Amino acid sequence: MFIDSHCHLDFPDLAENLPRILANMVANQVSHALCVSVDLPDFPKVRALAEAHSNLFASVGVHPDYQDTPEPTVAELVKLADHPRVVAIGETGLDYFRLKGDLEWQRERFRTHIRAAREAGKPLIIHTREAAADTLRIMREEGAAEAGGVMHCFTESWEVAEQAMEMGLYISFSGIVTFKKALALKEVAKQVPLERMLIETDSPYLAPAPFRGKTNEPAWVKHVAEEIAHLRELSVEEIGKTTSINYFKLFSHASE
Ligand code: NI
Image (cartoon, rainbow, N blue to C red; front, side, top):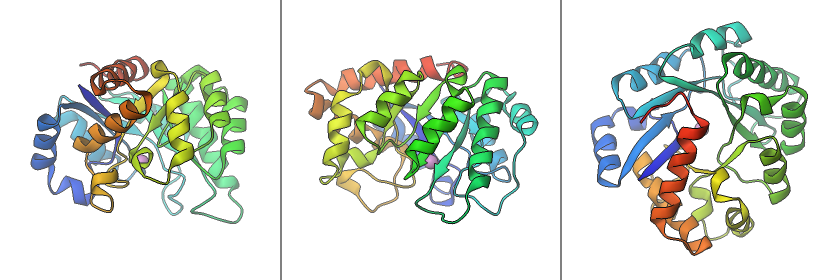
């Protein structure tokens, strides 16, 4: 009934406990999860998870926070994306919170990913932090709308959500929406049309409210759905069902 559209199951805290993590997904009706790549050296581990488990898929990309790592080329990303279990390009984007100084390399890396996504015909997974204006500008300049994608772990304003949706992107909410103080984000979660919404954990980070501070895992995406259901006065079943349909629409190379 639920799908975790963004997690990092190859990270040690989760990889070491994989059988338990997968069993917890089943117990919580979390049918699928997307394992998101953060750099090229670790990508084989992400791909291996998707090859070994029919309900896991993979993305390929280099995260904007990873500074000292091999820089991908468009051709390299397109080649790695040419695999039946790799359904998206990312995560990519801009992060002016974690890193400071001249971040032109980050913007160039983001452009590389958008070009690769267009060429590969696979959607983008976009991370943006304190860089919304530049993120949207580069998306427009590079024609990100043609590839489509998702603004993952969304924490920006309604105006940013609107502009991303105008380019055809989806908005994905993480456990942050369950935090008591995230009042502005709760308002955005009330407004985003259901047919443009995804849910995720970004595990092992950002455990939702009842487990805050613990190691997050895909099973807990259920709590994100429960919070959104509560905010919108809808059933959790409806949130689970709609976001699952959206997942397979966006990641059209993923099959049930
Ligand atoms: Ni992530």
